[in-house]
Structure formats: C-alpha cells, structure tokens
Image (cartoon, rainbow, N blue to C red; front, side, top):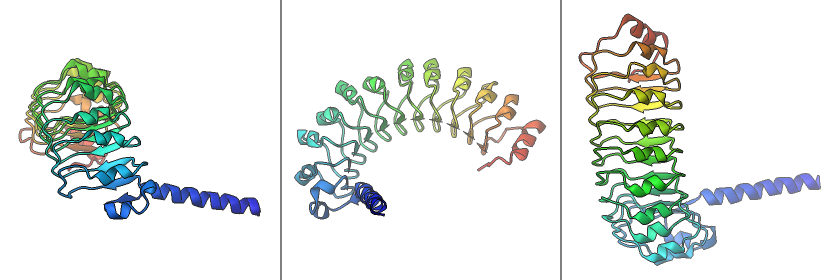
Length: 297
C-alpha cells in the first residue's frame, strides 16, 4: 500500500510539473511572483518598443511571444535566455533582423511574419537547431541563402512575399515536411524539389503557375497540394502517381480537362475544382468523385 501511495504521489507531482510548464503567463506582474516557474510568457500586443528588462529574470523561459508590438531592434540581452526554444516576433517593426537573434542557438521555432524584412544576415545559419520558421508577409524577393544551411528545418512558411523564383538550393532542406509558398510571384519549380522526400504539405496558391512540371508527381509522401488561384491550364498527366495525396486544391484556375490518371488517387479525400469555368470532367472522373464521396468545398 505504501508503494502504491508513493507511485500515486509521484504521478501527481509529475502532472503538476507538466501543467506548470504549459501555463501561459501574460502579465509580468504575475510571472514575477515565481520567476523560476515561468516557462511560457506572452507579451503580445502590449505596445512595447523594446523587451522589458524583467523578461531576463525568468531562467527557465522556453517560449516568448512578443508579437504585434512596436519592436524595431533587440539588444544583446536577449541572448541571456539560454533555455528559449520558441520566439515570436511577428507583427513588429523589423526591417532588419537584429544580430542578437542569430546568436540564439537554442531556438527551434522562430516567427518573423508580418514585418518588413527583405534579407537575413549570413549569421542566420548559426540557428542550426531551427525546425520551424515563419517569414510570411515580409518583403523577400528570394529565399535568403542562409536558410538553405538549416538542415534541421521541417516547416518553412513564406506566404505573401515577392518571390519570383525558387532556386535549386531548396533541395538541400531534405527534412522539410511542410512548405508554404502561397501568395508570391512564382511560375516554375526547380527539379531539386524532388529531393524533399518527406514533404507532406505544399502550398503554391495565389502564384503565377500556368503548368506544373511532371517531376512533382514523384513526391512520395505529399498529402496536401494547394494550387488554388493560379493560371493552370493543365495538370501533369501522371498526377495519379501521388499515392499519398489526400487533399487537392485547384480552385480558380483555367483548367479545361483533368488527366485520366486523377482517378488513381485512391487516398484522395478532398478536391476543390471551383471556378474553372471551362472544365469538363469525363464520366469516369465524375464517377470517381461520386463513388469516393469526395469533399468538394
């Protein structure tokens, strides 16, 4: 009985510890009551122009949300946060990435969305443990070279920029599972994208694609392909080879027909064909959609 009591007590203490680590503090005053027990701090939308000095009093801080403030720079003090793994700087006044960020080598997730960034310093490649990177709604005309050295990266989101080309270097990010490139000016893909064998999610919506290369059908784990709002006139004839594909978004294009092989997508659950005014489906394709009860938003 004593052993059982100890096991129950141990389990309770573990649960308390985990729940404490999940607690989000949004008030510095509350957080300062027990600095060592603060793991997640949200100072979003506080009209901050700099990081409050009190932030550096939390030795175990793992996640810091500074989104939607008025921060234009960060001091070297930010590097004192030795346990920080997640940093959110979205919606600030950053036109250049503060050098201090490139020294935060413990980061695994970084959100720089909704700023005015046009480039990243070469030192950005120091963030070798980075797994998730958000660069949405900035002013990038190309993916910065430093990103291609981040071999641990699994998720990269660069929606709403001004990208015109995707270089062969994209193939170096061999651990990518999600790649968001919607809302740019892209019209072609490099063959090296076929090296992304773990890619499950590829968003190319709101770009300038008129065709897609045949080699896109060799991505073995692709489950979501978003091609909404392009200028596509046709799809690769072997699209049926995307065996893992579950969701296919083709709304607002210029498609007139679909490849016969589309009926080979046996794992498909969702297909969006809206606003392709000239699209004609074959009887086999209509039957395929009906028989599989595909969700057609």
